[in-house]
Length: 461
Ligand code: NAP
Image (tube, rainbow, N blue to C red; front, side, top):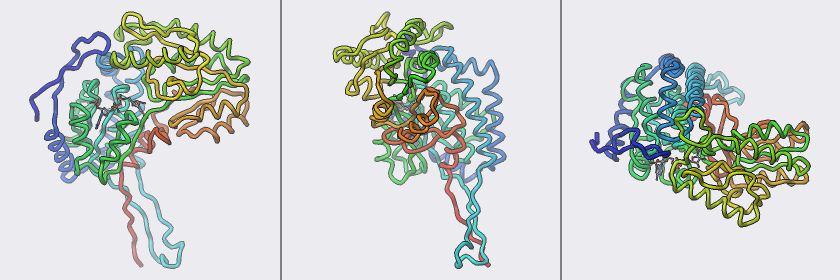
């Protein structure tokens, strides 16, 4: 293995928080070979996969362990400690769902005698591990999005070579240690740390990887699929999440929820609430309440217990988001709150009177910005919400069942949430986007099936 190392620094204050190996393509090659050898030499039977996952979930639920992981997340990603604690708790659910996946993963009976040719025969499928899984993960959920790769892969019996984001390798390495403690045998998981361009590309192009699972930006994800050769490729990508708020919807609850959902981890979530379409009759009081709640968010050090919003992942991202806000204001948007940089941190920002051509609407902001526009009729609102190249999650607040069902049919997203923000996710549910947002579903029960080959067995007469 490579002896070169790279420092990990806090995005908040640049302090060194750790040091990891700077791996290269040779390390990826060795890790893939070891994973293949593990699959060939000591495949895990389903009951043992379930037991490893169960022990991992128990270790993750340990309060001391959970707190240590939350602190590592906060240190390396600038996710505020209280938000990082939520992520650490969610990882328990993800591994617990992995246990269910391991215990229930089966093939299907095939009605082979439904046609005359099958008379007297019996047919069924077996679900077998697809092979070595290559997993590439983003910085914004350094624990739980890694869990969403590892738990289903273990459930499916696939060894994994994981490349975490360069900014957040420490949490992934801590999770790998925890899995070893939970009894995951050698060879079933290797973490390769290094840049996307070297280590990531080596994994993408390695012929020994059967299944590539990627969470991150569309720009990288779609390019990676084009370079992946014969691998099966699963992409979980970005969104510019819309929510429609009808006059009869609970707009006060919507404002309270959005004041968290648009700003957790400074808006750096793939389903951060970004575009809000609110009926004109309630737009004024809605904006006043949202502005008041967002102005009260505490901005500062991620390690501080009180902090709600901290630094963006790089100063370059802060400057990009600020430029998008300035451009929207120059184009006629109104600043309800925020919009400026104070002590190096972009203040949580609510913009009103936005138009669809502005980048804060058209693109994925991935920053602490919520853009609000008023509408007059529901058809217009649904058209605006759906007018995007993305398609991960969308929400609507309404008291009308017919309107909710119309939205469910009209909005071309992986999930449509009624009386809930598009940021809401439970880790055991199927989750994934359409259009530019991806091509698969995560959630261990779904992802584990994706990580298997289905072999048909036919028993002759
Ligand atoms: P990113 O820049 O696309 O990076 C994601 C991962 O890809 C990182 O590990 C990165 O490594 C690696 N990578 C970069 N270039 C690569 C290449 N040429 N070949 C192989 N790997 C490469 O994304 P990010 O900034 O970390 O995350 C933000 C994005 O992720 C947003 O668009 C967000 O919406 C999306 N996201 C989606 C979901 C979902 O479930 N749908 C969840 C969370 C985030 P380095 O770190 O070394 O560059």
